[in-house]
Image 1: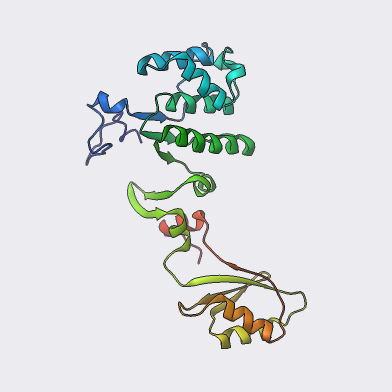
Image 2: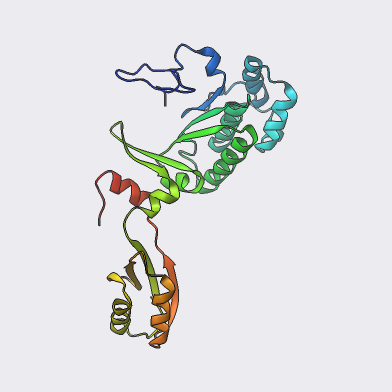
Length: 260
C-alpha cells in the first residue's frame, strides 16, 4: 500500500494509481485518501482542530467538518482532545480525516484491527457509508477475512508479493469445481436409503459431514430433482442449501494449504 501511495519506492517494477506512479505527482495525491495503521491524529488537539488542519490543506470548511463528524457519531466529542478517545473512536475519526476531501481513491490499512466486534461493525458501516458519500473506490488491506467477505466487492489474495487469486467475493467462494449442496434429513430418516436414492438420482461425491449430507451435482441436474427423489421415497428433509466456500477456504486454497 505504501508503494501505491509513493511513500516507498519499489525495488523492481512500478505501482500505478490513475495510470501513473504517485511518488512525484502531488497533484494526484490530492485525489487520494489514506488511513494507515495509525489514525494520523494529534492527541493533544481536539477532533475539530485535527480536522481543521487537514481541511485547510484541501480547502474544506468548518461546515463540512461538522457534517462529517456528525455522520461518524463524533460531533458531541468534537471539542475533546483526541488523546481521550477510545481506539474505535480514533479509527472513526481517522476515516473522517481520510475522506474529508472526497477522494476518488481511498486506501485503508487494517481499518478494524484491534477493535472489539461491536466497534468492528461500526467501522464496517462507516466505511460503506463514507465511501458511498464520497463516491470513492476503496482499497482495503486486511487479514480479517470475514470483514472483507461482508463489505468487499472484489478480492485480491497475495502470496509473497504475487497475485494468488483475484475475483469477486461471490465468484471466489463459488469456485470452479462442481456445485456442492448440503442436505439435512428429518429426524429418524434412513441415512443409507437416502444415499442410495441420491446416487440413483444422479448425485456424486456423496459424504456425511456431521449431520449434513454433502454431495455434488452435474450441470444438467437441478437440486429440485434430488429433493423430489427423497420425498418420493418417503425420506423427510429438514434443510437443503447450496454450499459455498468461506473466504478463509479460498485463502487457504490459494496458498496451497487447503485441507481438502
